[in-house]
Structure formats: structure tokens, C-alpha cells
Amino acid sequence: MSIRNSEHRCAHNDGGLIFTGCNMSNAAQGQAGGRRRQVLVNGKRVKTIDVHAHCVVAEALALLGTTVEEQRGPGLGDVGSRRIAEMDEQGIDIEALSINPLWYHAERDLATEVVRIQNEKLADWCDTYPDRFVAYASVALQFPELAAQQLEYAVKKLGLRGAAVGTSIPGREFSDPYLHPFWKKAEELGVLIFIHPRGTAPLESRFKGNGWLSNTIGNPLDTTIALSHLIFDGMLDHFPGLKICSAHGGGYLPSYAPRSDNSLRVAPEMDTGVKLKKKPTEYLRDMYYDTLVFTDEALRHLAAEVGVDKLVIGTDHPIPWQADSVNHILNAPGFTDAEKRAMLSETAAKLLGIPL
Image (tube, rainbow, N blue to C red; front, side, top):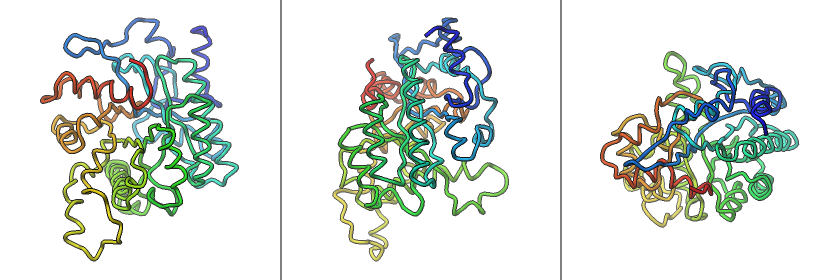
């Protein structure tokens, strides 16, 4: 495809992918200008892979009765086409795109159509820029059998690399047996499931005031609750082959993990009879986490709790939570060159089937 056609496609707003928070420019500008940042570890080039990057599809949003503008949130700029140029500036070679679920309340036919549109658009985009993008499928998780079918089709027919899901569906936690058909299919396919928070709506009244608390506190808390249910309700014992990656470093759970090991010792009356095969903290090392935790000490502690081999870059692009996710890893003290290469590239490449 020519650069002219690529530019038109990237900037298309009524049905194409929209990367909120970008400035207007040529999508191929970074490539054409040769300004891509080369990331080196001890003098050797590393192909960096970002597992946590967002977009939306305007056509799908319209079916859900919302717009791109309503989904931006604080800090996001105008819709535009500088995605690849921004990746080049950041030193990100490949992004794994995901769409946060707004369709979990939709009835079956509407959810089916939204998922179809989004997955086809994502696959189309990845086909256009195969050396820069892969994507996670959207699924109608509120209908687990349907979600399993959507995941299999997206992986086997569209070339998507897994699924992006929210932290719960209305009225049910991830550990609910109702969702087992989806988890079974994900385990069978061996693909990555990327978990992104949806917020904690029951606490909304307490998040009012300064600080954007619904996101600042609410999103990490939402992930913490979801992962805790997966652990304590025995879901990870039931599907030990699942590959799960959590946004934002797994929320608060890794920061205070040992409390989980002591909870039922302190309050044995709260034990529901689910007998885990190992200590709760040991399950943290069965999952993966992005490195969006801001400081050297937070990254060191996360690695100590879950294992450095479970960490992958997550930028949250285009939302500017962390100024430089690549340098955060490159400059972090206490990690070997091999560990930095694993976080920047190698672990994500294995999870997403990306050749290095």
C-alpha cells in the first residue's frame, strides 16, 4: 500500500481505527523520516514490544451509542494519525493493540456485531503494518460460549494474538464457573489474555473530587479484585495453562502480596472450602504483568514478587501515564542485560508469537 493510501486509512474516522491522543500528521512519517529510536542493551539492538496500547473503532462506538470524543477521558488530545511517528520517538517497535470493552452490557446481536467490526478492523490494520502492530481480539465475554468462538475465529482466521478483556462482566467475577467455556478455549489455544480494568462503579460516589480517583485508585483496585478472585476461587488451578497479563503492574496486589498468604489463617471462618494447590502469592508467578509502575523501586519490588521473567513493557499509549517506558527499564538499577532484554522484548515475543 502506498504512503498516500496508508495516510488516508490511518486518519479515517468513521469505521477505521482511532488512536486517541495523537496529533495530526502522516502515519508513516516516523518510518519515512528515518527517525525511529534504536533501543540498545549493551550495544546490541533490541526489538521492543509494547503489550498495552489502546485504540477505538468509531463505527463500533456508534453502534453502542457513544463517540470517540466521549471516550477520550482527561489528558487525551485530538484524533489524528501520528501513531507510528510517536512509537518511533518512544523507541517502541511493535504495539499490541487492544480496545477496552464497552459492550459487556449489550444484548447478544449487538455485542456480536460490535466484536465483528472491531476484530476485522484490527486485523486489517495489522495486515497494513505487519512489522509495527499486532492486536488482541475483542470478545463478548458476557456470552462465554460466543466469546470462545470469537476468540478461536480471531486467532485462527484473522491472525489476532489473543484477547483483551475487562476485569469482570455485569454481576459476575472472572472466577465464576459461568465463564469457564471462555477460559477453557483460551487455555486450549495457548494465547495471551490481556486484562485491563473497567473501574469500580460501586465506589463511584467515593471517587468524587480532585485527583481523577475513579482511574487513579479505581483502576488498580479493580485489577486487584479480579486477580484475587482468580487466585482464591481456584480458577488458576482449574486452568493452569492460562496465559494472563495484567495492565498497570497487576494493580495493588503485588505491592501487598503477603497479606493474601495470611488472610485465611487470621480469619479461617472466611474459608469457603476452595482448597488451593499452593500459597496465594505463588500464583502471582503464574501470570504476567506490564511494567507501568513508574519508579525504579516499584519495578524492583514487582520483579521480586512475580519474577522478572513475567514482566513486559506496557506504555498505555496514547494515554501519557509514563513518560518513557523504555528508559524506565533501560535505566533501572539491579537488572542484568539479559533481564532487560527479556522485559523489553523476549518475553512478549514468546507470548504474542512475534519473531525477533
